[in-house]
Image (cartoon, rainbow, N blue to C red; front, side, top):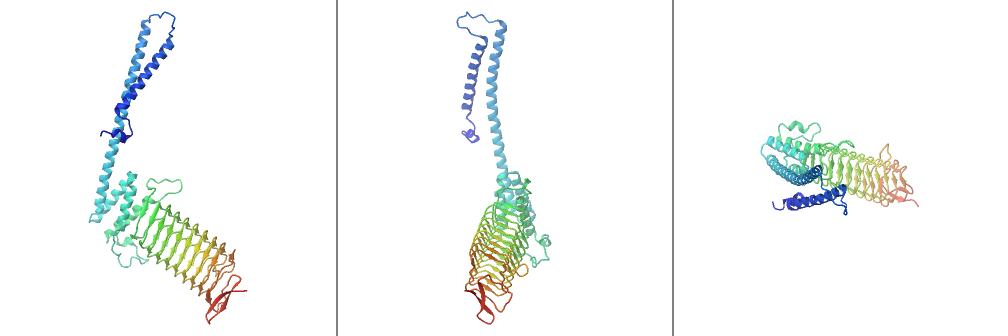
Length: 443
């Protein structure tokens, strides 16, 4: 190519040789004057004829300088040839990698499951050897998992049955499990200071609408992740995972246990409208950005003990059918439980609310207790706390709760009669019907 040297970041051959010859001439002139200075050149003295020995030494010096010029030209030419050869090798390697990628993609679209497995391993090997292809291969693997997948055999979501029981009968299931393990293998980080050669850094994953089976993402690190409307069959395990960017689980469906213990969410976290059919564990999880669980449905137990919400936390209209555990949870910014429904026990023992906490319209149908009946015992509310229109059908205990500002229980109702209720001063319950009391502020 005429302008290939520009692509390689090199001077043209004419410019390089001109510079080399100019530098050589300058060196020759400088050497000549240096030689005259060393031999002495008195302007008034009559020059003496050089002896044969001196002439030979001078000729040797001239030949050495000429040889140096030739070597310089040869060096420039050799360097350019090496760079051109390296560029040609790199270009050929890229072409070969592109061919391998195309072959892997073609294999993954084959009718036979065994061939599709070969395509997965081929793409994995390509991405491991060529970091440039890692995000591309990840995107393609995710797109494969997003493709429609027929329903699992009856009873798969039964706790006693595992997907491995069906891999021999359902080859496509085995291909999908292999694709999931590929993501797990290359997104898993080691201990601090342990740089795994198999780890792919800076990866974004998009599994929107995918059907995942017993998905294991423990200790994985992704820049960002999208699981919007993803269906998780079997357990979904994210313990110790880290999301540097946003993590979206809006509308996701978890058929069994969902484990997010000690997970770190560095960006915005969205679980709006997510459905948890089994237990959901977020114990010790850290939410650095906004965390949205608005409209989420927790059919089993929901555990948020020791979780830290550094940004706003939203549980508006969330439904807790089982026990809801928020013991020792820290809410650093505004917290919204407006319209939330607690049909099981609700426990906020030792929770810390550093900013405003809204429980307006929340419904507590079960016992609002945790740690031996202390519903909000020991909870700390540094900002405003709104429980107006809240409904407490079971026990409600606020003994030991600390409010820097007086809480608001206007129009809140509670079961009656119930001697287990403990209300923060100056609020008390006043019977309005045979089984219902209304919270009023004692004057």
